[in-house]
Image (cartoon, rainbow, N blue to C red; front, side, top):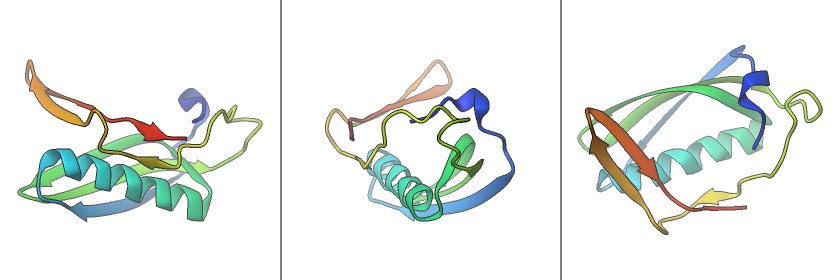
Length: 101
C-alpha cells in the first residue's frame, strides 16, 4: 500500500478480534486494521500480536497517511479467505491470504 520505510511510528492503535481458528483470526485482524486505516487515514509499519485461544490482541504503530511522502500505491479494500493459510515453519509463523484491491 505504501513505502514502509517512510512510515514513522508516531501513533499506535490496539486491534482485538476473535474467530474460530488461526486462519480466520488473520482475516479478521487484517480487516480490522484496514477499517482503522480507512476511517482514521493511518498507515502502519510495525505490528505485534498475541494469540490466546480464539482471540488475537494486537498493536499497530504508524502515522497519518501522506500520499506523497509515503509513496502511496494501491489501496487494499479487504482480506479474503482465498488461499488462506497460517503455518508454523522453523519456529516462526508464515501467513498468507489474497486481498481485494
